Image (tube, rainbow, N blue to C red; front, side, top):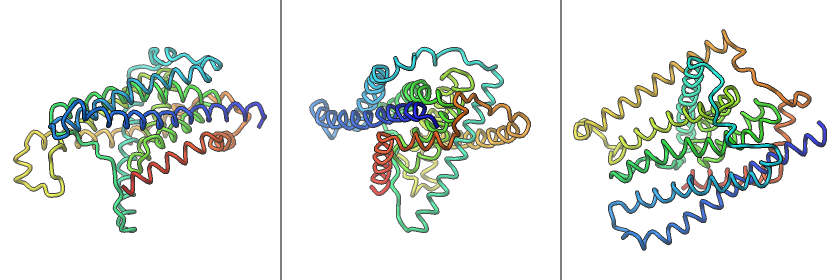
Length: 333
């Protein structure tokens, strides 16, 4: 591999990872500041204390920090490579039928991975006799908590995460080959979540979202699958709020009929999407394999060699270590 190409890949990797490290630092600083500020705004025994705290944190995380990172990216590398955020928000270059099929496949693969991941970690817990801690996405049981989960997960996350990862970091990386960029940023997206439970399925979500962005030359389909998955997850988080799932019996279910209906509806929807998406994926692989072909602007270097250069960039090594360390800390509580 040419030295110039190595340097370009390493630079792209370092800048991508720098954005994530800055995100970690800024969000921890923001959380520290909010924890100092919020007791002056609300008494700690307030019904809405936790919910309002989360409203402020998610607002700062997405609406403040992500745009700051985009400005920094533009100043550090964006201008040099001709990056323009608007270029990712064009009309998708695919028919409505193709978009629906690809989005359904993506969601099916994400849900299949999520289910497989849950089974895997359940087995790990049984074999090791270690209880792993996972982050709670359950909404606070009040209208502020419900509204916060809807806005944060169904609106902020699809808009701002796609803006950062697919419209920016992926565009920075796909210069060295579309599938290369798809896989690198997919894995990065999984690592960014910093918890074992979400790593595998968010990595697959990241890969599928980047594939759709590369295939359609637009980030809008990626936002669509991200919104759909998060909206279903948000409805489940609202349905689970206030339920003692460990001791839930028939009497408890009858006391919460609307939540039970919402849980049943969302779970049936997930199962339907999973089955339909996986079946369509197999059909696509067998009958339309050309669907998965993407451009490779750097064919003179293999994907493996490019990946080795990417993951051994110094800032990226630090970023991976920090992400894994936070995931381990979160898992052991």
